[in-house]
Structures are given as C-alpha cells and as structure tokens.
Image 1 (cartoon, rainbow, N blue to C red):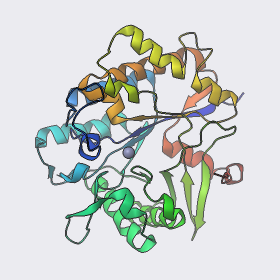
Image 2: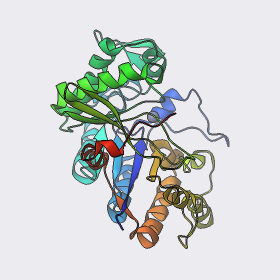
Image 3: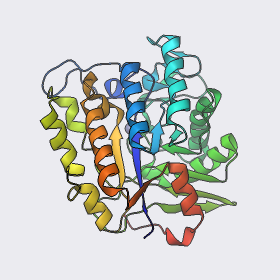
Length: 326
Ligand SMILES: [Zn+2]
C-alpha cells in the first residue's frame, strides 16, 4: 500500500518576538497571567530537537517584519543581533529542508506602506481584502525578498489570518507571479484555507497561468495545542490527554485517524504561540508526544512530507488534485 502524505503546518513563528502578543490586543491569558511578549531561543531549539527526533516535516513560517518591529535583515527592536542570527541559523540548518519555509506576509500585524516602510492604520488582513494583483504582488515580493536576503529561499507563502480570501483569485495570481520573480520557480505553494470534517481533503491545483502552477495546501486538522496558552497546567496527565485528541496512546483513535480513514491527507496545524504556551512550552511537549505516537503506530500508513515535497507530488499528477468546492 502506498503511504499517505502527512504534514505539519507551523504558523506565526518569528525570531524572539511573539506576533500573537503584538496583534491579539490582549495583555493577559484567559486565566489571568501576563501574556509574554517574547519566546526564548531555548524554546525554539526545543522545537528543533522535537522535529528532528520525531522526523517531522511540513511548513514553517518566518514572519519577516514581526509586529512592525523592524525586519530580519536589518534587526528587530528589543532583539539582540546574536539571538536573531542564532534563530535564523537554526531555521536554515535544523529545520530546512524537512520544513519548507516561507513568509507569513510582512508583519502579521499592521500592513506596511512599501514606499516608506511605515505601518498603515489597518492590519494586513483588512488591507488585503480590498487589494488586487497589482498591489499584492509587490507586497508578497517584499516578504519573499527579506527571507532570500537572510539566505532562506522560498517558493511559498502563508496567509496571516485569512489574508486575501475576499480577493482569492487576485491573491493567487499575485503569489504565483511573486514566487516566479523572486525565487525563479514556476511552481509555488500557499496556505490559506482549511478543509476539515470532509472526505478526500487534499491539496489542489489553484492556478495554472503562463507556464506556472500554484498549489493550495490546506490544513485538514485543528490546532489542538491552542488551549495550552490559557492554562498553567503542565502535568504529564494533561499532556497525554491533549495528545489523545489527535491520536491516543494505543494509536487506535483520534482526529488524525479519523482524517486518514476518510481518505484525506492528515495536515496538522499548530501556531508558534500554542507550542510556546505563554513561555511554558506545554504545546511542545504535546507535539513531542503526538510525534512519538505517529512514529509508533502509523509509520506503515503515513509518510512525513515538506510542503515542497507535497508541491512536487501534486505537480507530478495534477489531474489527481482538482480544486474542491468550498
Ligand atoms: Zn498566522
């Protein structure tokens, strides 16, 4: 039996800075602890350890101007250059190529005036909703170029929130054109939509234009690590119970199994803030447990793939990946 692709989406990472703290508009967790504005490199390296140990592959965002606090090329407000460099080095040497890295547009906060670099008075999601390919293309090019300047080549992008969903065809054309210009690739991937609770949920060919192909890769599962942000619980029982939602310790039940058994590709999703768990790293421990259970029980059924490997898979048999109805 041919193995089914499995992949892990990590949304919202940036060096040290928590884009969640910057854009969430809150200062406390739901249980009343101060929301932390930064995550240490120690936590970042713990993620790298787990990814390597469990053989995880997927997509890892790098927000290039996180929270409108500078950029990864010229430096970030409140972040030591050595820390920034160590974080980017870790992405390049420990996460790539198992994880395909791409920008999650520029700031995941306020939209940027490309002419001045200043923040506009609305967030990127609201800004994108009224744009077309003529303005979206240079915006995406800027994001890809910042990653390229620090030595991270990228052929795909992630949508902050549901950036571009109101103008999806324009957005798709803009991604394909921007990836072609900055990265010289005719193939590109992007993540915007989720396909959940439905059979045969798979990536699809979103656009074919001028010899270029854009592939949409959806999340097919939910971020079950998110509740760790709002609880001080870190005990082993909690970690095990949270992992059970995705896959039980005996490997017989859980949402990953449900997705797999419905003919869909399991494409998991976690956010940087849900792995960091307001500095406690509880989400990292749950991911480690889930990764171990997949290794133990599903290795004969699934094969971890990066987004670039999924892109290649779709490009090799485009007819098998038609656009679904939403
Ligand atoms: Zn995001």
